[in-house]
Image (cartoon, rainbow, N blue to C red; front, side, top):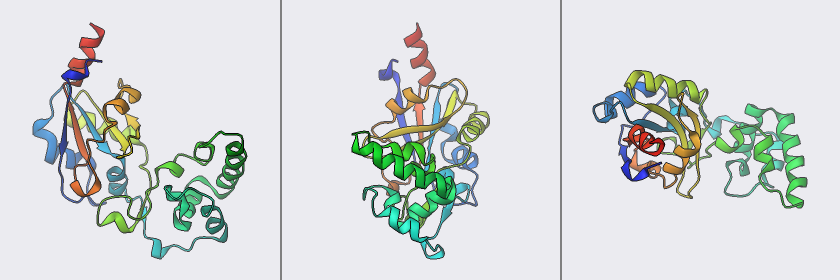
Length: 222
């Protein structure tokens, strides 16, 4: 793709809550800047917050199993806390998570890391533990969003843009596109967003407009 044609524009918003509709937020803050050849990407944690997908740790009572399993998870993972592990078990199922832990441990002995997250369900990798997202939601655990493809399609239809995406990106050069509107390549979008144009949580720029995406695609195919 002719990525030299593309411009990434982060868009600042107010602190989004579950009272907001994500399409309304994008239309309010980014609408005038979005053209028919652009792609709109939005941070997955903000989509999840608008869906009310978060829990306060003080309202949780992690099981003994969650406390035990969390001790064996790398400290950088949200599953390394008892509450994070309990959320993963609640979402993916206790038996599934336990089996993923056992199989993942065996696989790791043979040099195959990351199997736990592949087997425990998508939420295992998507849950943001306390401090993992923007204030005031840095005091809660935020799940991954529900139905990200439907969210992307809704955004595309509302804004009249070339496409839309829900993305999980961080400063460690890890980018995963969870849902895209029809016709978009999630792997290509991951490469475009790899440098985290969303910034850190405090910047409050959960929307990124990928300008001229359609023209870049056309140039590549031409």
